[in-house]
Amino acid sequence: MSVQMQQAAYESGLMSATYHERLVADIKGVVQQAGINETYVWTSMRKHCGSDEVKYVSNIKLHAEREDPIFGMAYVGKISGSAVNDRMMAIAGACLRSYINAKVMTLQEVIDAMKSGLMPSPTVLLIPNFFLGRGDGGHIADWEVSSLIGLLYKRQQEGKQTVLYVSDWAGMKAQYGQVFEDHIAGNKFVKITSHMTKE
Image (tube, rainbow, N blue to C red):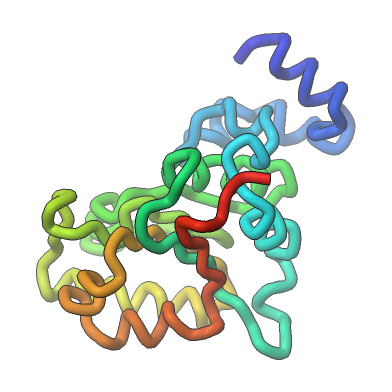
């Protein structure tokens, strides 16, 4: 990582040499575990994300403890501005700066991990291709759909946050079933749609 980027992070107050000493000492291992590029730790999430996303992340430790708890955030449809994958890595980077265990995983990685019994359980799990329409290459087997809703339920029970991208809401309902729409459509997930832009 460039010295200039690190210097800028310290000068802007985004990072603190004292507070983030432990994070920086193992930065390579931390970002590898999180599934993101190191750049996203050294730059503000505001570069890719809008005010609704920033608000969600700013209160992320409190969401599950609210009277009306929130268990995640869902991007729905075509999102303007930065790509969803960049947005999710920026969110993960912000979480890491707050010492919150976050991990970005593709849907395929999630399914493979569940199949092998090695599914991690980060405080914040981000899946940038949770549902893609068939035209975008999205399709999973019926048993995988069942495992997936089980994962979402388990994370809700544990009070953990899950961030998802759904390219086609109607397509998700048709392929994954009503139970997914019921779980994500309620007020338990913050929705980010195409009309929301960067600050």
